[in-house]
Image 1 (cartoon, helix red, strand yellow):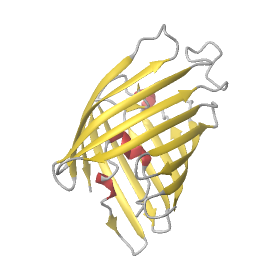
Image 2: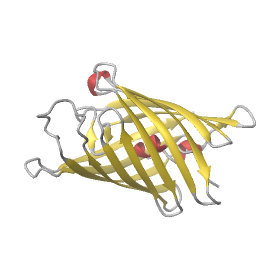
Image 3: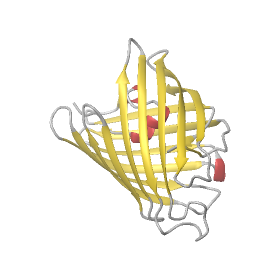
Image 4: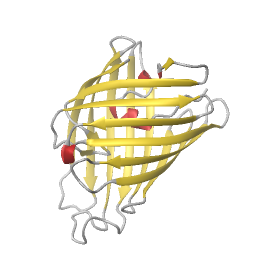
Length: 224
């Protein structure tokens, strides 16, 4: 059975962990968590100048497949607050199609973004295509969660982003450029409400004058 889709949780290794929701009616469920991490890395790039962050999330899902959510993080630009709404359509017992609209808001800046995404969920991998309407960027990614022995889980990610023409200024370093990123993480469930994670994230701009950037990641997530 396809579970409520919460893609932002995968960045912290909390996808299956936070699906343990507390039901407050026969048709609605809510997932809540807080996390402490050594870095906030999204799509291979640090959003906290490689400093430690605290994050939190609430996601409300309906049995029909519709859901809404709110997520926040400390970090650069006064931190980040995201909210989203989406719908997951089951395509058989192990397949699904998810459509989502997300708003990325930065309290200390003006470069807010609205992104639409489509994700194909399969037993082997999740394939996503995302488009940012404010700046014209496109992002494509593959995600896979592999259960290991006992409380262990392996999380794999690969992504590719190409920048659109609507960017901050014509001489921006990423103008007419693209980059690839990848990440591998291992998660361990201490309890039903507490998860440790550690891993490595990498990204490389297609301009060879920019060095490859790699980051070691670790932290803890608590759901309630």
